[in-house]
Amino acid sequence: MVKPSHRREMAKQAVKTREISIRLACRIFGISETCYRYQAKNSQENDKIADWLLRLTQAYKNWGFGLCFLYLRNVKGFPWNHKRVYRIYRDLELNLKIKPKKRLKRKKPDTLAVPEQINDTWSMDFMHDQLKDGRSFRTFNVIDDYNRECLGIEVDLSLPALRVIRTLERIIEWRGKPKTIRCDNGPEYISKKVVDWAKAQDIKLQYIQPGNPQQNAYVERFN
Image (cartoon, rainbow, N blue to C red; front, side, top):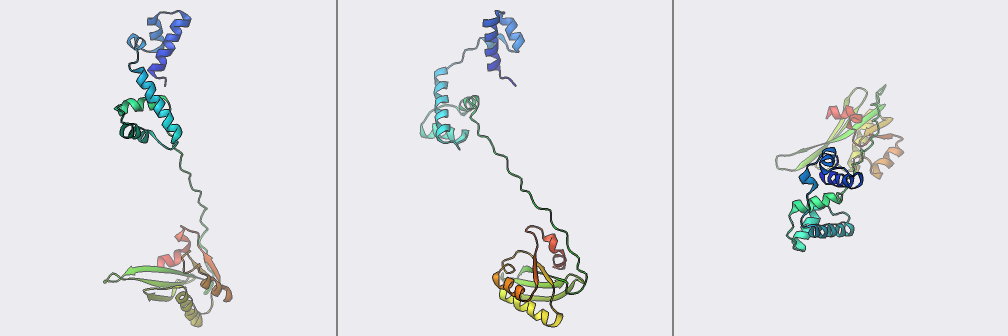
């Protein structure tokens, strides 16, 4: 949309070059004769404001109108009204361009695999809760995905990677060894001790995709 100030300049140009009347030019460009004859006041001071704004935005490229105005008002002590400074700021088209946020492309989550027999795939996960005295405790839950059987629940205030390995070995003694153990990307599961233990036992650790707990739905529902 063309601003009135621009339409005024266009009307003056038409009067000068086309030799038409002021009344006709105002009617063509949609402005009043008062607007046509308007003379800007304090034009020298406006030029000074524009000069300061240009210098500030060139020196501090990440400054918007707010920082520029605060600098002119509080540091330099100019008494200019913020509306007046902002009008000149807009006329100079110094507005900062807002960069749109990049939309993250998330991978489509894999479908939840359905095991065909016992000890085909186990799932393990932690749960957290708090005692009456404020101390936090954890439970380490292991289930068989085929029949949703709970194979073990280890409870303690702290369950590091060595406790995870010890619990799994105790379950394997009476249950047998699984082909795959599904888990999330917790620090206990991705630790070198657990990875080396699973490799030595010829057990595949199947990590779910980050931010997709539905891929570990069997144990999540059990929790």
